[in-house]
Image (tube, rainbow, N blue to C red):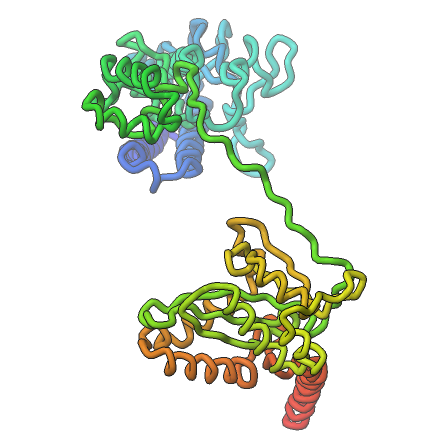
Amino acid sequence: MPFTAWDANSAWAALCTISAALVHWFCVASDLTRRDSGSFRLHLRWWLALIMEAVNDDVDAARAEADADSGAEVRLVGADAVGADFPSGRRGRGGGGSLGGRSAARCGSRRGDRRFAGLQAGPAAPVPRRGVGGGRVARRSRTAPVHGDRAGGRVGGAAGKIALGMSGPIPARVDGAAKAALLGLIDDAVRAGWSLTRACAALEVDRARVWRWRQRRAAGRLEDLAAGGNPIHGLLECEEAEILALFDDWGDIDRSHRKLAHRGSYEQRVWVSPSTVDRVLARHGLALQGDPRPARSVKTPWPAWHEWRPNQLWCWDGSQFERCAAAKHAYAIVDLVSRKWISTHLTANPDSVAARVLFSRGLDNEGLLTNELRARLDDPDAEPPDDTTIPLLLAISDNGTEMRANETRRFMALCSIAQHFGRPSTPTDQAWIESLWGHAKREHPHLTTITDPTVLTAELERIRAHHNSVRLHEAIGYVTPNDEHDGRGDTIRAARQHGMHTADQQRRAWHRSQR
């Protein structure tokens, strides 16, 4: 069936209708992109650009077939100076005579009509149909070699975006020169027949940014402003001068930017925050002298003769129960190895007598107070043992008055107990006794409400027995301190591991038998 001019016009009208609908949808999508860029991703813009390219290619193919059937001649096409700069052979709008029976006024301004610059048009070459043995009409995005370049090569130099040293999406911040160059590329593309959205998609830059750049270019301020700005709550010059004057007058006395800030309000000279004072002084290269930091202390190691076993390392300290005013000072001893609460003593006076009573009770509870040691303690003229004798144990404490007292030192020497003091202001050196008192008060809060010394003493003894024989201690593998102190801890922990393994084997055997 012959292909008439009416059929070509009908096909052309149908394709134009489809193209207009897609362009309308494309513009609506572009508006959505500008309003809500987060919901319209960049890859969707690329899909729209590809759809528009495919529509233009199909329209060009149909028109080429109609031109071949009608035998029309394509007249001279002028050189397109702008389109030669675009890759892939894209050209601007061309003018010409009749094409397929349509007037030049109708076809001369059609969109997407791209031709090679300086090409003299002669009689139209026959275009094979898409039937059997016919080739497919060439796509316009695949250009023929020009000036010795291979097909698809760039004509007229490198692409504008690559020439700027950019690839991929445009960065969030670019300088004014890059903005001007990008705007020039977009303006050239628009003059060549491209839409603004398509040019922005090809350059991978958001259209809203291009609009803002155009407005700023018109105002002559493409370069970004310096960071910072001028906040309305910024510091005044007179206030900054007053801060510097405060530094000169009070810097040697206060020696702190915090004190200097409060000094300003105390003297009713300036009202600023400490951080503002610090920033102003740093801006002018000023620094307060400040108080020197204390030297880092070094922990004294334990003596080499000690052994890691029960009744070898004792730690002792006191705590206060303010409600029991008659005797609010309580002292306790804990064994470092077994975590056993050795003894407790409640007294009204924190002195060396309290230390003597506490250790005497502890030695008696552990069976270490022998008859020889009792006689030595009862004799006021007794002399301490020879210094070459290995001490009975090591008593670890802080630097309290009752710990450093001469009477306490003499008593410890008579008992053959060596003393080890922690670092000043470092309670972690006595963490074991601090933890004991912390757990006792937290787990038994009623202790802080007792006012009778007799009742408090009885409660402390009851809690000590519970701590040693019932409470499972995490630091020693969840056994009681008595178990660890008496040497049963390893056996209990091994039995638990054996029981866990046996229970696991029994569960596996039962589940296998139920399959």
